[in-house]
Each structure stands twice: as structure tokens, then as C-alpha cells.
Length: 213
Image 1 (cartoon, rainbow, N blue to C red):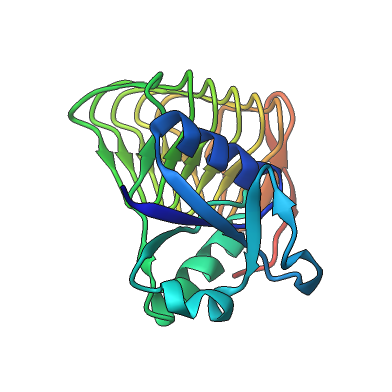
Image 2 (image 1 turned 30 degrees about the horizontal axis):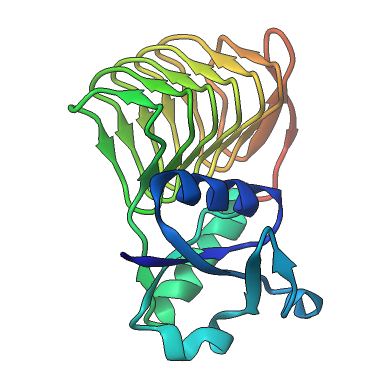
């Protein structure tokens, strides 16, 4: 049985720990960059510190870097994990997810219970697809994207790297959401959303520009 260490020790990391319990995957610890968290026990799992603190486990464990919802933080965790010579864990998919065998799922991605992914969908690396999300045919989801609970994506939607889709948002067919953009909770996206912007509302409109990178 493979052993997993999860980056993060907050609410989302705890949900991944629960997902691992459902899948029979052993979680041996959480990582957290906050020094005060080292040594704590969260949901029965120890917070081990940072990568430097688990050097002796390098060849025994695989790391999940999607233990936080912030796409930029996920990307940094991935970079540091690979640079330090640790292995990235494969994707985790809850048994109560419905998805076509023609879909492609990247490494380190999480798909939670109740989600439905229809046909010919491409999911990138370190993507979070939270519970009860629906994604229709021919959608393309880039790396580090976070899709919150209850989101609905119509067919042929493209979401570029690092975008964050808020809880309960909906995106109509053939729309494009630019990289590192953010869609507010409950929004309805009827037009393309530029990169590095925050959009919200029904229909969604751009509210502000976000910092590049």
C-alpha cells in the first residue's frame, strides 16, 4: 500500500485525508510551512513540518500537492516537491464519481464524490474538482485549477491554468476562462473571462485586475 503525505493541514487537506480513507490510501502526515503547526495532530494525522523534516521518507512516500485550494500555492508546492526529489502522487478519484473512460486526468488531481464528468474531458495536473461538480463534454481544464463545490460547466468550456471557480458558479457552453483568473461564487459566466481578472455576478462581469503571476 502506498503512503501519502498531504501538503497543507487546513480544511481542504482534511477533506483529502477523508477521501484517502474512503479509497483505502494510507496518509502518514501533513506538511505545513507554519512552524507553529509542526507536531500538531489533525484528525489523527501528525503535522510533520516541511519537506526538510521528511527527508528520510523521500523514497517511502508520495506527496499530494493539492491539499490547498489556492492555485498559486499548489503550484509552489509542486515546484518545491519536485526540486527536492520527492515523488508526486497519482490522482485520487472518489468511487462515487461518474466519468467517461475517454476522459484524461492529470497527476495529483482530486475529484470528490458526487461529481459527473461526461465525455472527452481533459483535466490537467493538480486540479481540484470538489463535490457535486458537473463538467460536460469536450471541456479542457488546465493545471492547478480549483473548481469549488456545486460548479456546473457546459460543453466545450476551456479553463486555463491556475483559475479558481467559486462555489455554485455556472459557465455556459464554449466559453473561455483565462489563466489565473477567479470567478465568484454563484456567478453565471456567459462571456469569455480574460486572464488575471476577477469576475462575479449574474451575468458575470470583470470586477478587477489581479496581479500577474
